[in-house]
Image (tube, rainbow, N blue to C red):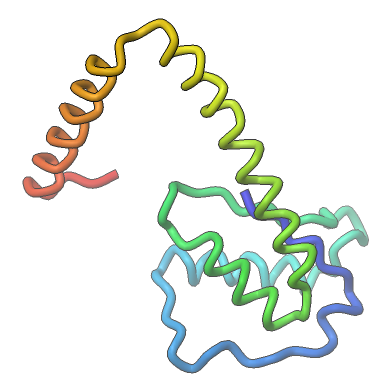
Length: 130
């Protein structure tokens, strides 16, 4: 989750994105959603004050957030939002891992992890994707 708590005053000065930056179609759609949100004046007329971006790991959410932060001079809110989002996602996983690791032999966990890795690699080679 990425929260972009941009105030209207922060949208006044805009920097161009790096000319070499290219985005996927999904990232382009996300950028359009952010642009529409900014045009709707966040915090006014029922428009949410915070924009949240969800997606699978590795889809470029952080890249989009940093590009927007540079463009709208909003690095602190973006870094705070991304950090909070990662903590919300990671802390429960770490705590669950600690509980599981105490009850299941490490060798078994390693073998399960290896089997999942090999299965996903085989599916990827066969052209399967999420």
